[in-house]
Image 1 (cartoon, rainbow, N blue to C red):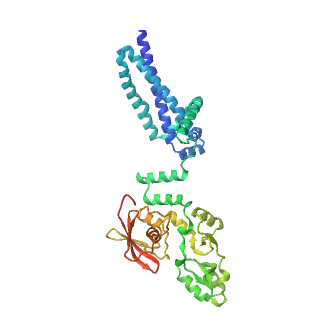
Image 2 (cartoon, helix red, strand yellow):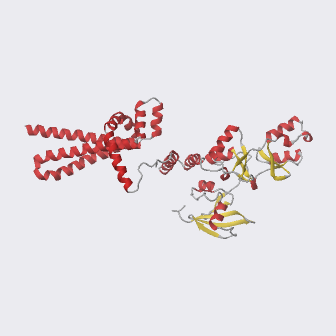
Image 3 (cartoon, helix red, strand yellow):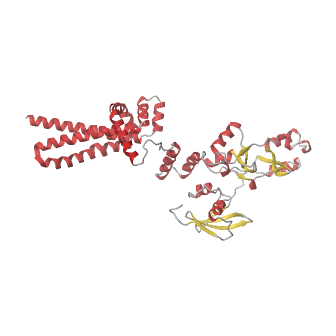
Length: 426
């Protein structure tokens, strides 16, 4: 009778230990997989458990250490009890039986089952276990601290610095989440591109998105007001740089509305209008300015237009608020825009591309991944890789794409034919 009671109590203790093991395993998975952003939102809504869970995740090393210590303790104790109980029944063969039995029980009920539940609902699981886990972390803190010091000492012997700051940046974490959602079908390509472009604003310079000086529509301040009005009306833009004597001497930016107000005030008498006096002073920004900073500057100054200069003060082009917004949402067109086919797919699978098309726009249009570190435009990439200005019909293959020069004007590559050759490298 005593043997039966002891065996029953041992079995009951094993069950309790397996439940505790499941708790430790599930808690570890939930608190490492939970979204910190989601927990932060719940914390702002006044949920105290969310605040506890978020605080535990901030000290992830202590958290995992404490849970592993607890998990190993209960698993080893459960295995010892099972072996002891089976020895009474099966003798020496009980060691083999206990090994197989405890492996199956721990694997199914203490590992796979709780971790599966934790993965399915990590935030909800974390909120439930957070208060208890906080106590466990405090109780086991002396043990986990000692273990951490031993581990760091061993790693240091092999030249590994465990205390180095290797935490992934929040931007890269978000980017990885966006790419994963797109791969799993949760986001369309256009949505992925918009979110990715928003993250890229802190890395892209205005020189990457500006309108180059060779494509700028400018007005000559020495022309008559009537000629300037005709050019302004013929232009698809509302703001245009104004130059005097030479095109490098930009004296202002003329807004079409200001010109029309002046015409109205002069009752249509163009001889009374002094165009330079109604132009706004030009705003010059360095070509190395990041888009994120330029966007903030546009909003702060309540301006939409800036001229881009290089380190020598020479005008390289212009950038507008619309240029930056287009980096996020894609091309913005209205009824006055002149549509230019910069990327034209062909029936044979190749793509005709204007040399001035930026690599970023090309990648977004074709879902490619050509590098834009050394060159901004498609023509610039060919020249950089070929280390020469190629002739018409010359072809080069790099980054999994065949680049063939279709047109060239003087020293400028104006059109390219691109053919994708290596799916793995693009």
